[in-house]
Amino acid sequence: MPTPTLEQAKLHLRVDFDADDTLITSLLAAAVESASNYLGRPIPWPRLDSDGEPVLDQDGEPIEEPVPESVNAAIKLELGALYANREPGAPVSSSAFRALLMPYRIGIGV
Image (cartoon, rainbow, N blue to C red; front, side, top):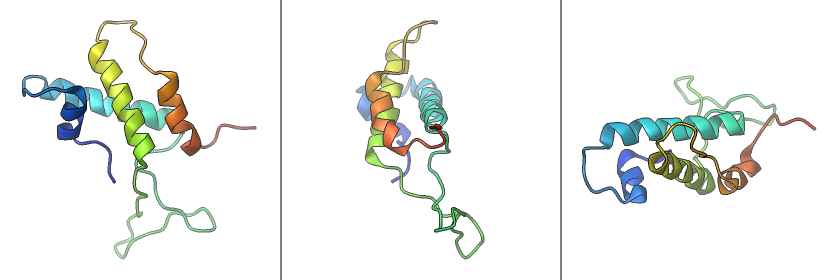
């Protein structure tokens, strides 16, 4: 499954009008970026072989792993917080966001 679409984001936010589409698209990109930064990897991330090398398709492009539902849920949580708290300095990332992403985090050291 890919990351949430604009339509899925609007459904999550309970927005049924189009006036905020540009804002929601921007905040959705920010939420995906925030999750990606926390995970230490791109979303979606490439499928790796047993040697840790990306698996390539017939055109030489990396094959992407499906985005886990818990990662999409974290993205939607972050999106909801960003949409609801648009003032500077408002807290955004929650412990639920971090807990949903933690199993997929890489490169966090010892």
